[in-house]
Every structure is written in C-alpha cells, then in structure tokens.
Length: 298
Image 1 (tube, rainbow, N blue to C red):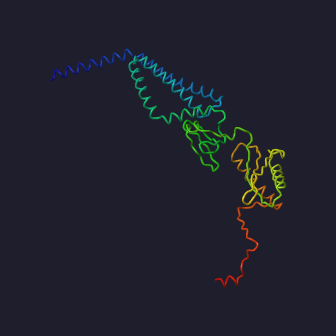
Image 2: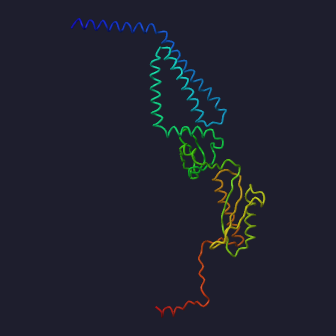
Image 3: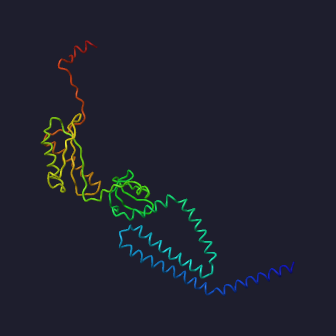
C-alpha cells in the first residue's frame, strides 16, 4: 500500500513538473496573448468611436448608429480572441468552439425567428427616407406621430398622447400612410342646410368664410364646394380645402375651427342647419276632435 502511494505521488510530481515546463515554454505566448487581448479591447473602443463619428454624418437613426458601432466593436474583440487561440496553439479548441457556435446559432435562430424578423425589419425601416422621427403616419389601424424606431418596434404617439408600439415586421409587411411627405393637408367637411335656403348664397358665403380665415387658401378657386344630395332633412354638401400642415392633428383642429366659423356665419344670415326630423303630412279633411268629444269617447 505504501509503495502504491509513493508511485502515485511520484506520478503527480512528474505531471506537475511537465505542466510547469509547459508553462515556462509557453510563457512568451501567454504574454503575447495577454498583450493581443488588451490591444483588441483598446482597438475596439477607438474603432467604435470612429465608426460612430462617421455614421453621425449619415441619416441613420441614432439606435442604428449605436448598433452598428457596437457590432463592429464586438467583431474586433472576436478577431482578437481568434488570434489569441492561434497564439496559444489551441486550434483544436477553436474548431470545437466554431462547431458548437454553428449548432448553437442554428438553435437560437429557430427559437428567435420573430425577434430576428423584427430586427431585420428595423434595419430596413432605418433606410426608408420617407419615414423619420416626427412624421405623422397611419399603419396597422393606428395613427400618430413617429417618436422612436428601434430594432424591435416602431413607437407612435396618438392624438390622445398614448404610445403605441408596433412590431417592425408588421410595419414592413403592411401599407404605411405618411401624412408628412407633403407640405399641405386637405380638410374635408360634410354639412347640410335647410331646404328653404338659397343654395347659391350658401355656397358663396361658405367659400368666402374659408378664404377669409385660412392663410393657405389664397383665392376662391382653392376651395372645392360640391352639393352632394337631397337628404331626409337637409340638402347636403361637401367642402374641401388645403391647409399648411402635415399633421393629422392640425387637420382635425382646422376642421373644428371650420365648423365654428360656418355656424357663426350661418347664424348671422339665418341659414338653418337642420337636425334629423320627421314630418307628418295629414290630409286636409283630417281634424282633431275637441276636448268634449275626446271626453265623451273616453
């Protein structure tokens, strides 16, 4: 038993000695590897700042600029790690790491299909020139101002000041209506006046009211006034004109202001805007009995 213990001890000492020899032999490589690692960290930091400075001159979103700079920084560090493995003669370990990374990447890719789709769509949206911060858009049945675009979702602020986060994939795959691509927006208002009204006078009064109160409307030709139908209780028309705004909120405000201006103008000229009513037409020979007759019948 004592002999076995001595043999085991000798083997352990021999093994430790071989390790020590290996460490001494590879000590220059270890020092070089440490130097390369520190150098790669410093290089990644400065290269990231340089790339970010270059990207600041482009029209990319701030989130995309930071993402690209971080990816390049990670790539620089990854290259440094591969060089370190080569310096330490760990090529077999490198092959094992690459094989494992391939399998792990496939598994992660299958598990994160939705997230990767949103990421790719976010990159696509960052290159669309007609979609930027501050634009008023309508997509996926939501309407509002674009306040943020990242790799997961696009954020829009609605009229009621609520934020809506729409996945980038849905925005890319569905139509986008951008109200901010033009310098003007059209206000459309439908209204009606009583059957007793002078239609030519109503048209002239309505157009003059719009021309005198909106800067974007310079003359009467800029206002489109169309009589649409003979309704149940009114003769209905449609009014259209342009305003100097690309925001749907400003369009709503202009429409509200138009309603107040027209109501004041119509009231001053005794023009009636009737509400839905029902008219009962009785024959001439139809009479209503007096109270005595009614009481007798009761």
